[in-house]
Structures are given as C-alpha cells and as structure tokens.
Amino acid sequence: LSSKAFLDAAGEHLKAADQTLDDAALRVLFRKLLHSALWSNQGDLALVPGDVSNVHMASEICTSSSSKLLVDEGTDACELLLNLRAQTTETKDASPEGGRGEGGGQGGVCVDIVNDNSGVELLCDLIFADFLLAHRMAATVRLHVKGEPLFVSDAMPKDVASHLQD
Image 1 (cartoon, rainbow, N blue to C red):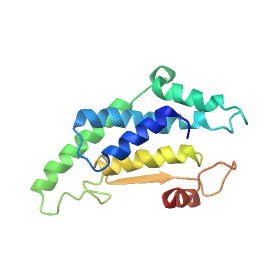
Image 2: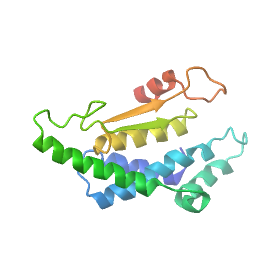
Image 3: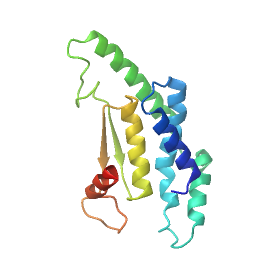
Image 4: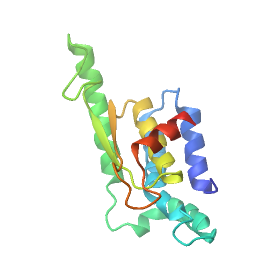
C-alpha cells in the first residue's frame, strides 16, 4: 500500500477506532476515508500494468479530489449520518425498546457500499465501513460485491472473507 493519503487516513482511523471523537473530528476523518474509498481504484496497477505512477496519482487525487468530482455530496452524507446518530441517541434514551428502528441495530441506519475491485480498493471500503460502525454513524453496513466476476479483480464474497481474516 503505497498511497500516503490512504495510509494516513487508515492510520488515523485505527488510532481513533476505540476513542470517542467529537463531530468536527468525525467530519474530517469521514471525508478522508470516503475519498480514499472513492479514489482507491486510481491506485490499481492493473489500469496500466507495470506503471507505478498510478499509485502516486492515487495519493495526489485523494488529497485534492474535490476538484475532480462533478458533484460532491460527501459533506451532506456525513451531516445526515451525524444527525441520524444524534436522533438515535435521543430516541434510545427515551425508548423502552432501546432505540431499535427498521433494519435492526441502533436506530436502523444502514449504509450500502457498492464494491468494485478486490485488493487495496476493497480494503479502503472495509476500513470506511469499520469507521462508520465504530463511531455509530451506521448500525449496519451492507457490502455489495459481485456473485460472479466479470474481471479478474472484481470483489466477491470470498475476497471480503479473505480481507477480514488477514
């Protein structure tokens, strides 16, 4: 994993996974991990076999990616999840059922992640999913991998299991 932006974001998440972060810190880390997951495909050496400049390009894109997007609703998504988390906490405190909403979990907030490739790209998705769960921004994260690969690098259920075991 040569992408400095990814390594920095992953390291920050691992350090903060067991800590209670304020909303400002969560917003910063959410954005870093979201963009690492979003742009991790750019570091795929399969794009141009043998061309390690892809890894350096991925790092650059992760740090200056907003200008490369037509629409960036990452801030809105983060605010929505933080607001739902706050509402869930209030509901949980006042509810005899413990705040369980539709879909189970704490308030039932479910985030869906569509996965493309295995390897670094899937690892970025899994770290982002772990961040959402660790900081109660989601009660459930549903990963959408391919049942049958179209390309050799496509993420499949066995790849998720393999990444989680390693």
